[in-house]
Image (cartoon, rainbow, N blue to C red; front, side, top):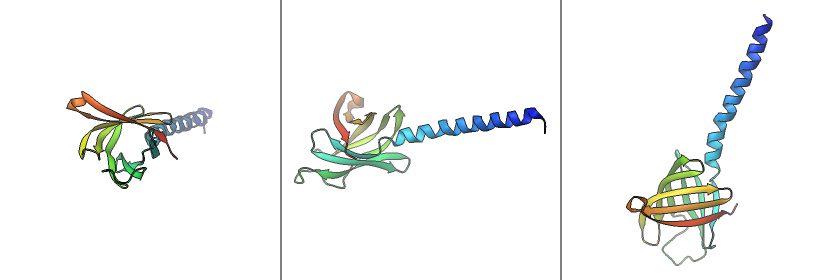
Length: 132
């Protein structure tokens, strides 16, 4: 076997390792939002997890259980990556029973969710911190 073929094989093996490493960065980064998040006011907790090819959020705990929001209610739907640390989909507001265009933005252990109407002209944001 020629000497150059061993070096070439080692070089190709290293390249394959690098490609696999970069390929695994995307899915891992998209999963960083998964987990339990507590609203900054302490009023509720939501569990964000994979649902099909997107991320969804379900209420897991409420400080006040006598309001329109209910434990087990899904409030974030079909959130798909839309940039670095960002997802876009739909957000349900239990207070008015309406579903809005929604986004999630992750920055470290802080998450901001937003629901918008009128093509994003009017938005309401909620801040969350990791609870798990």
